[in-house]
Length: 384
Ligand code: SF4
Image (cartoon, rainbow, N blue to C red):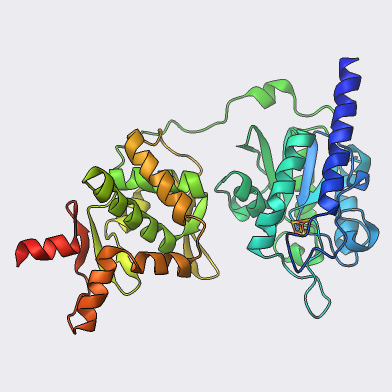
Protein backbone atom coordinates (compact mmCIF):
# COMPACT_ATOMS: atom_id res chain seq x y z
CA UNK A 1 0.00 0.00 0.00
CA UNK A 2 2.68 2.43 1.01
CA UNK A 3 4.72 1.57 -2.07
CA UNK A 4 1.66 2.00 -4.26
CA UNK A 5 0.94 5.38 -2.68
CA UNK A 6 4.52 6.53 -3.04
CA UNK A 7 4.54 5.46 -6.66
CA UNK A 8 1.23 7.24 -7.37
CA UNK A 9 2.56 10.34 -5.68
CA UNK A 10 5.71 10.28 -7.83
CA UNK A 11 3.60 9.89 -10.98
CA UNK A 12 1.35 12.74 -9.92
CA UNK A 13 4.30 14.98 -9.07
CA UNK A 14 5.88 14.24 -12.42
CA UNK A 15 2.60 15.15 -14.19
CA UNK A 16 2.55 18.43 -12.24
CA UNK A 17 6.14 19.16 -13.28
CA UNK A 18 5.36 18.39 -16.94
CA UNK A 19 2.31 20.66 -16.79
CA UNK A 20 4.21 23.56 -15.23
CA UNK A 21 7.02 23.28 -17.80
CA UNK A 22 4.54 23.62 -20.65
CA UNK A 23 3.71 27.18 -19.47
CA UNK A 24 7.34 28.26 -19.12
CA UNK A 25 8.33 31.39 -21.03
CA UNK A 26 11.62 32.17 -19.25
CA UNK A 27 13.79 32.11 -22.39
CA UNK A 28 12.55 34.53 -25.08
CA UNK A 29 14.46 32.71 -27.85
CA UNK A 30 13.26 29.22 -26.91
CA UNK A 31 9.90 29.40 -25.23
CA UNK A 32 7.80 28.97 -28.39
CA UNK A 33 9.49 25.63 -29.05
CA UNK A 34 8.27 22.22 -27.97
CA UNK A 35 9.16 21.54 -24.33
CA UNK A 36 10.54 18.04 -24.30
CA UNK A 37 9.45 16.66 -20.95
CA UNK A 38 6.74 14.01 -20.82
CA UNK A 39 6.16 10.32 -20.18
CA UNK A 40 8.20 9.79 -23.37
CA UNK A 41 11.35 10.77 -21.46
CA UNK A 42 11.41 7.33 -19.88
CA UNK A 43 10.96 5.51 -16.63
CA UNK A 44 10.53 7.77 -13.61
CA UNK A 45 11.42 4.84 -11.31
CA UNK A 46 14.78 4.36 -13.02
CA UNK A 47 18.00 4.50 -11.03
CA UNK A 48 19.84 6.02 -13.98
CA UNK A 49 19.14 9.53 -15.26
CA UNK A 50 20.78 10.66 -18.50
CA UNK A 51 21.16 14.39 -19.21
CA UNK A 52 22.02 15.58 -22.71
CA UNK A 53 22.40 19.17 -23.96
CA UNK A 54 19.13 20.19 -25.68
CA UNK A 55 16.46 18.72 -27.95
CA UNK A 56 17.77 18.42 -31.51
CA UNK A 57 15.90 20.00 -34.42
CA UNK A 58 15.55 16.69 -36.26
CA UNK A 59 15.44 14.64 -33.06
CA UNK A 60 13.49 15.41 -29.88
CA UNK A 61 12.07 18.71 -31.14
CA UNK A 62 10.37 16.73 -33.93
CA UNK A 63 9.60 13.44 -32.14
CA UNK A 64 9.03 14.62 -28.57
CA UNK A 65 11.34 11.81 -27.39
CA UNK A 66 14.77 12.86 -26.07
CA UNK A 67 17.73 11.52 -28.04
CA UNK A 68 15.51 9.92 -30.66
CA UNK A 69 14.97 10.49 -34.36
CA UNK A 70 18.33 11.92 -35.43
CA UNK A 71 21.89 10.62 -35.69
CA UNK A 72 22.68 11.44 -32.05
CA UNK A 73 19.61 9.42 -31.09
CA UNK A 74 20.70 6.52 -33.29
CA UNK A 75 24.13 6.49 -31.66
CA UNK A 76 22.65 6.73 -28.16
CA UNK A 77 20.21 3.88 -28.77
CA UNK A 78 23.03 1.75 -30.18
CA UNK A 79 25.18 2.46 -27.09
CA UNK A 80 22.30 1.54 -24.78
CA UNK A 81 21.52 -1.62 -26.76
CA UNK A 82 25.17 -2.62 -26.63
CA UNK A 83 24.96 -3.06 -22.85
CA UNK A 84 21.53 -4.69 -23.01
CA UNK A 85 19.60 -1.65 -21.71
CA UNK A 86 16.27 -0.53 -23.10
CA UNK A 87 15.00 3.02 -23.31
CA UNK A 88 12.07 2.25 -20.99
CA UNK A 89 14.54 1.26 -18.22
CA UNK A 90 16.14 4.70 -17.98
CA UNK A 91 15.08 8.35 -17.81
CA UNK A 92 16.49 10.86 -20.31
CA UNK A 93 16.29 14.64 -20.19
CA UNK A 94 18.24 17.70 -21.37
CA UNK A 95 20.00 20.66 -19.75
CA UNK A 96 17.51 22.87 -21.61
CA UNK A 97 14.11 21.49 -22.51
CA UNK A 98 13.57 23.55 -25.69
CA UNK A 99 15.46 23.38 -28.99
CA UNK A 100 17.94 26.29 -29.31
CA UNK A 101 17.71 26.90 -33.03
CA UNK A 102 20.04 29.44 -34.65
CA UNK A 103 18.74 32.04 -37.07
CA UNK A 104 19.82 29.88 -39.99
CA UNK A 105 17.60 27.06 -38.70
CA UNK A 106 20.39 24.77 -37.49
CA UNK A 107 20.84 23.45 -33.96
CA UNK A 108 22.42 26.18 -31.83
CA UNK A 109 24.10 26.08 -28.45
CA UNK A 110 22.07 27.14 -25.41
CA UNK A 111 23.41 30.24 -23.70
CA UNK A 112 24.54 30.25 -20.08
CA UNK A 113 21.41 32.23 -19.17
CA UNK A 114 19.12 29.69 -20.87
CA UNK A 115 20.86 26.81 -19.11
CA UNK A 116 20.58 28.67 -15.80
CA UNK A 117 16.86 29.30 -16.44
CA UNK A 118 16.19 25.64 -17.10
CA UNK A 119 18.38 24.41 -14.24
CA UNK A 120 15.43 24.79 -11.88
CA UNK A 121 13.52 22.17 -13.90
CA UNK A 122 16.59 19.98 -14.06
CA UNK A 123 16.98 20.16 -10.29
CA UNK A 124 13.28 19.30 -9.81
CA UNK A 125 13.60 16.36 -12.20
CA UNK A 126 16.62 14.95 -10.38
CA UNK A 127 15.00 15.31 -7.00
CA UNK A 128 11.83 13.65 -8.30
CA UNK A 129 13.49 10.71 -10.09
CA UNK A 130 16.03 10.16 -7.26
CA UNK A 131 18.52 8.26 -9.43
CA UNK A 132 21.54 6.49 -7.97
CA UNK A 133 23.60 7.67 -10.94
CA UNK A 134 23.31 10.85 -13.00
CA UNK A 135 24.97 10.40 -16.40
CA UNK A 136 25.80 13.62 -18.22
CA UNK A 137 26.28 13.45 -21.99
CA UNK A 138 28.67 16.20 -23.06
CA UNK A 139 30.26 19.25 -21.42
CA UNK A 140 27.11 21.39 -21.49
CA UNK A 141 25.15 18.88 -19.41
CA UNK A 142 28.06 18.48 -16.99
CA UNK A 143 28.39 22.28 -16.60
CA UNK A 144 24.61 22.59 -16.09
CA UNK A 145 24.90 20.47 -12.94
CA UNK A 146 27.46 22.91 -11.58
CA UNK A 147 24.72 25.54 -11.49
CA UNK A 148 22.74 23.29 -9.12
CA UNK A 149 25.77 22.34 -7.03
CA UNK A 150 29.35 23.08 -8.11
CA UNK A 151 31.35 19.90 -8.75
CA UNK A 152 34.56 21.29 -10.26
CA UNK A 153 34.75 18.50 -12.87
CA UNK A 154 36.13 18.86 -16.39
CA UNK A 155 34.80 16.33 -18.88
CA UNK A 156 38.11 15.15 -20.33
CA UNK A 157 39.49 14.42 -16.83
CA UNK A 158 36.33 13.04 -15.25
CA UNK A 159 34.95 10.95 -18.13
CA UNK A 160 33.55 7.51 -17.27
CA UNK A 161 34.36 7.76 -13.57
CA UNK A 162 31.92 7.79 -10.69
CA UNK A 163 32.18 10.95 -8.60
CA UNK A 164 30.00 11.70 -5.56
CA UNK A 165 27.74 14.67 -6.22
CA UNK A 166 24.70 15.96 -4.39
CA UNK A 167 24.09 12.73 -2.45
CA UNK A 168 24.36 10.48 -5.51
CA UNK A 169 26.97 9.50 -8.12
CA UNK A 170 27.85 11.48 -11.19
CA UNK A 171 29.14 9.65 -14.30
CA UNK A 172 30.25 12.15 -17.00
CA UNK A 173 30.27 10.88 -20.60
CA UNK A 174 30.77 12.48 -23.99
CA UNK A 175 27.73 13.34 -26.08
CA UNK A 176 26.83 10.68 -28.67
CA UNK A 177 26.44 13.31 -31.44
CA UNK A 178 28.50 12.45 -34.55
CA UNK A 179 30.61 15.61 -34.11
CA UNK A 180 31.58 14.55 -30.55
CA UNK A 181 33.10 11.32 -31.85
CA UNK A 182 36.04 13.46 -32.96
CA UNK A 183 36.87 13.85 -29.26
CA UNK A 184 35.87 10.34 -28.20
CA UNK A 185 35.37 7.58 -30.75
CA UNK A 186 32.23 5.47 -30.73
CA UNK A 187 34.36 2.45 -29.81
CA UNK A 188 35.59 4.32 -26.70
CA UNK A 189 32.05 5.42 -25.94
CA UNK A 190 30.92 1.79 -26.13
CA UNK A 191 33.47 0.85 -23.50
CA UNK A 192 32.34 3.86 -21.36
CA UNK A 193 28.79 2.48 -21.43
CA UNK A 194 30.10 -0.93 -20.39
CA UNK A 195 31.76 0.66 -17.36
CA UNK A 196 28.46 2.37 -16.56
CA UNK A 197 26.53 -0.90 -16.84
CA UNK A 198 29.03 -2.57 -14.52
CA UNK A 199 28.52 0.13 -11.89
CA UNK A 200 24.73 0.37 -11.89
CA UNK A 201 21.59 -1.46 -13.01
CA UNK A 202 18.89 0.84 -14.41
CA UNK A 203 16.16 -0.71 -12.23
CA UNK A 204 17.86 -2.10 -9.12
CA UNK A 205 20.48 0.67 -8.93
CA UNK A 206 23.95 0.41 -7.45
CA UNK A 207 24.86 -2.42 -5.08
CA UNK A 208 24.31 -1.02 -1.59
CA UNK A 209 27.90 -1.59 -0.49
CA UNK A 210 29.13 0.47 -3.46
CA UNK A 211 26.53 3.19 -2.92
CA UNK A 212 27.34 3.58 0.75
CA UNK A 213 31.11 3.42 0.42
CA UNK A 214 32.60 6.75 1.38
CA UNK A 215 34.28 8.67 -1.41
CA UNK A 216 37.96 7.90 -1.78
CA UNK A 217 39.62 11.19 -1.03
CA UNK A 218 43.21 11.36 0.04
CA UNK A 219 43.58 12.68 3.55
CA UNK A 220 44.21 16.32 2.88
CA UNK A 221 46.09 18.52 5.27
CA UNK A 222 43.95 21.41 6.44
CA UNK A 223 46.11 24.48 5.82
CA UNK A 224 45.67 27.69 7.73
CA UNK A 225 43.84 29.79 5.17
CA UNK A 226 44.14 33.56 5.39
CA UNK A 227 41.10 35.76 6.05
CA UNK A 228 41.22 36.75 2.36
CA UNK A 229 41.02 33.07 1.38
CA UNK A 230 38.13 32.43 3.76
CA UNK A 231 36.29 35.46 2.34
CA UNK A 232 36.83 34.12 -1.20
CA UNK A 233 35.46 30.75 -0.15
CA UNK A 234 32.42 32.34 1.48
CA UNK A 235 31.65 34.37 -1.66
CA UNK A 236 32.00 31.27 -3.84
CA UNK A 237 29.77 29.26 -1.50
CA UNK A 238 27.13 31.92 -2.17
CA UNK A 239 27.73 32.40 -5.89
CA UNK A 240 29.08 29.04 -7.09
CA UNK A 241 31.13 30.62 -9.86
CA UNK A 242 31.92 34.15 -10.98
CA UNK A 243 34.38 36.13 -13.05
CA UNK A 244 37.70 36.99 -11.45
CA UNK A 245 36.76 40.62 -12.10
CA UNK A 246 33.55 40.33 -10.08
CA UNK A 247 35.35 38.54 -7.27
CA UNK A 248 37.82 41.44 -6.89
CA UNK A 249 34.96 43.96 -6.73
CA UNK A 250 32.92 41.91 -4.25
CA UNK A 251 35.95 41.61 -1.96
CA UNK A 252 36.46 45.38 -2.11
CA UNK A 253 32.78 45.98 -1.28
CA UNK A 254 33.02 43.51 1.62
CA UNK A 255 36.03 45.30 3.09
CA UNK A 256 34.50 48.72 2.54
CA UNK A 257 31.33 47.61 4.35
CA UNK A 258 33.46 46.03 7.09
CA UNK A 259 35.33 49.31 7.68
CA UNK A 260 31.97 51.09 7.99
CA UNK A 261 30.32 48.49 10.23
CA UNK A 262 33.17 46.99 12.22
CA UNK A 263 35.88 49.63 11.87
CA UNK A 264 38.24 47.10 10.32
CA UNK A 265 38.88 45.22 7.10
CA UNK A 266 38.11 41.52 7.04
CA UNK A 267 39.41 40.14 3.74
CA UNK A 268 42.21 41.96 1.91
CA UNK A 269 44.95 44.05 3.46
CA UNK A 270 45.15 46.53 0.60
CA UNK A 271 43.20 47.39 -2.56
CA UNK A 272 45.08 49.28 -5.25
CA UNK A 273 43.68 51.59 -7.93
CA UNK A 274 43.97 49.69 -11.22
CA UNK A 275 42.53 50.45 -14.66
CA UNK A 276 39.28 48.60 -13.84
CA UNK A 277 38.99 49.78 -10.25
CA UNK A 278 40.06 48.31 -6.91
CA UNK A 279 42.21 45.18 -6.91
CA UNK A 280 43.66 43.22 -3.95
CA UNK A 281 47.23 42.30 -5.01
CA UNK A 282 47.38 39.30 -2.69
CA UNK A 283 44.42 37.65 -4.41
CA UNK A 284 46.37 35.90 -7.17
CA UNK A 285 48.64 34.11 -4.73
CA UNK A 286 45.68 33.30 -2.46
CA UNK A 287 43.81 31.68 -5.37
CA UNK A 288 46.90 29.81 -6.49
CA UNK A 289 47.26 28.23 -3.05
CA UNK A 290 43.60 27.12 -3.06
CA UNK A 291 43.47 25.96 -6.69
CA UNK A 292 42.20 22.38 -7.03
CA UNK A 293 40.95 22.38 -3.44
CA UNK A 294 38.75 25.29 -2.34
CA UNK A 295 38.64 26.94 -5.77
CA UNK A 296 39.01 26.10 -9.43
CA UNK A 297 40.26 28.66 -11.94
CA UNK A 298 39.39 28.46 -15.62
CA UNK A 299 38.44 30.66 -18.59
CA UNK A 300 35.05 31.12 -20.17
CA UNK A 301 34.77 33.12 -23.38
CA UNK A 302 38.29 34.38 -22.61
CA UNK A 303 37.23 35.72 -19.21
CA UNK A 304 39.16 34.43 -16.18
CA UNK A 305 36.66 32.65 -13.94
CA UNK A 306 36.72 31.27 -10.41
CA UNK A 307 34.42 28.67 -8.95
CA UNK A 308 34.10 26.56 -5.83
CA UNK A 309 36.69 23.80 -6.00
CA UNK A 310 36.17 20.04 -5.75
CA UNK A 311 37.87 19.33 -2.39
CA UNK A 312 37.56 22.15 0.16
CA UNK A 313 39.80 21.56 3.16
CA UNK A 314 37.97 22.33 6.38
CA UNK A 315 35.15 24.83 6.87
CA UNK A 316 34.90 28.57 6.27
CA UNK A 317 36.22 30.13 9.45
CA UNK A 318 34.79 33.62 9.78
CA UNK A 319 32.85 35.26 12.58
CA UNK A 320 29.08 35.68 12.31
CA UNK A 321 29.44 39.46 11.96
CA UNK A 322 31.86 39.04 9.04
CA UNK A 323 29.73 36.37 7.40
CA UNK A 324 26.71 38.64 7.67
CA UNK A 325 28.58 41.39 5.82
CA UNK A 326 29.55 38.94 3.07
CA UNK A 327 25.96 37.70 2.79
CA UNK A 328 24.66 41.27 2.60
CA UNK A 329 27.22 42.35 0.00
CA UNK A 330 26.50 39.28 -2.11
CA UNK A 331 22.74 39.88 -1.84
CA UNK A 332 23.21 43.46 -3.03
CA UNK A 333 25.79 42.98 -5.78
CA UNK A 334 26.30 39.26 -6.43
CA UNK A 335 23.84 38.97 -9.30
CA UNK A 336 25.07 42.08 -11.11
CA UNK A 337 26.88 41.89 -14.44
CA UNK A 338 30.53 42.94 -14.59
CA UNK A 339 29.54 46.34 -15.96
CA UNK A 340 26.89 46.91 -13.28
CA UNK A 341 29.18 46.02 -10.41
CA UNK A 342 31.93 48.23 -11.87
CA UNK A 343 29.48 51.15 -11.90
CA UNK A 344 28.46 50.40 -8.31
CA UNK A 345 32.11 50.31 -7.22
CA UNK A 346 32.88 53.58 -9.01
CA UNK A 347 30.11 55.21 -6.97
CA UNK A 348 31.69 54.30 -3.63
CA UNK A 349 33.44 57.04 -1.64
CA UNK A 350 37.06 55.93 -2.19
CA UNK A 351 36.61 55.55 -5.95
CA UNK A 352 34.78 58.91 -6.21
CA UNK A 353 37.72 60.51 -4.39
CA UNK A 354 40.22 58.89 -6.77
CA UNK A 355 38.25 59.94 -9.86
CA UNK A 356 38.08 63.51 -8.56
CA UNK A 357 41.86 63.56 -8.07
CA UNK A 358 42.39 62.15 -11.55
CA UNK A 359 40.19 64.87 -13.03
CA UNK A 360 42.56 67.36 -11.38
CA UNK A 361 45.45 65.71 -13.19
CA UNK A 362 46.88 63.57 -10.38
CA UNK A 363 48.23 60.13 -11.21
CA UNK A 364 46.37 57.77 -8.89
CA UNK A 365 47.48 54.49 -10.45
CA UNK A 366 48.49 51.91 -7.81
CA UNK A 367 47.40 54.21 -4.98
CA UNK A 368 45.83 52.33 -2.05
CA UNK A 369 42.05 52.76 -1.95
CA UNK A 370 41.69 50.74 1.24
CA UNK A 371 44.62 49.97 3.50
CA UNK A 372 44.96 49.04 7.15
CA UNK A 373 41.32 49.67 7.97
CA UNK A 374 41.28 53.12 6.33
CA UNK A 375 39.84 54.47 3.09
CA UNK A 376 42.00 56.56 0.77
CA UNK A 377 40.49 59.93 1.74
CA UNK A 378 41.44 59.29 5.40
CA UNK A 379 44.84 57.89 4.45
CA UNK A 380 45.69 60.99 2.42
CA UNK A 381 44.42 63.27 5.22
CA UNK A 382 46.75 61.52 7.68
CA UNK A 383 49.82 62.00 5.53
CA UNK A 384 49.20 65.61 4.50
S1 SF4 B 1 14.54 26.13 -22.08
FE1 SF4 B 1 13.63 25.65 -20.10
S2 SF4 B 1 13.58 27.61 -18.99
FE2 SF4 B 1 13.86 28.07 -21.18
S3 SF4 B 1 11.79 28.39 -21.99
FE3 SF4 B 1 12.31 26.22 -22.34
S4 SF4 B 1 11.49 25.18 -20.52
FE4 SF4 B 1 11.59 27.36 -20.02
